[in-house]
Length: 186
Image (tube, rainbow, N blue to C red; front, top):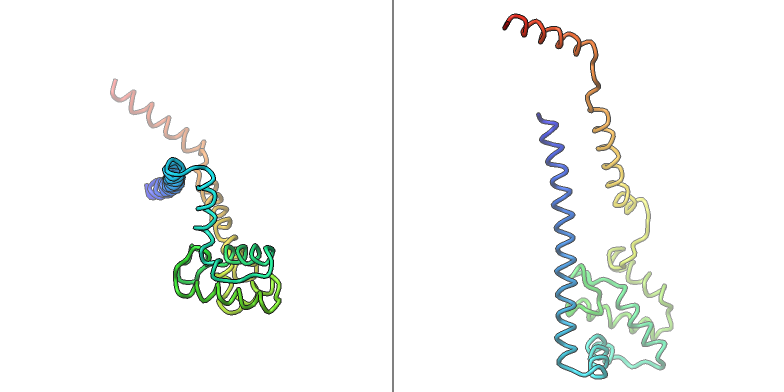
């Protein structure tokens, strides 16, 4: 009975988690589509493209760049660095004070002539691997990837080994006992 309960609980948890992530993604997509539809209805196509660019890069207007390539590099860097305070927002979208400081530091490092990788390395050294959306695979982070796989493998082995094997000797004895009880009832 316990096995049935835990199996059922395990599968129900998986199903609920899958459905929750599906509906969350669906709601997010629906909200994005309706917001963009409302905005598109309110403005002309040329106004929409210009306002989207300005809204996304308002903070970049505060920094002077020598050429367009430096500006693109700055924008790319601010999108791949995560805000330590907001946790799931990049520093380009975050309004936290630390995100402002990080953008300013990215700009300073770029003005010093450092490459993208050097800026990323500086930020990772200062704030940890968490600040970069593509964390390295090392002895600490490998467990984040392996633990679910190991757990799934163990659960599969438990289900395979706990499956009852038919016991023919017991089956014959049970059938004989059932036949005897039927004969007694007659």
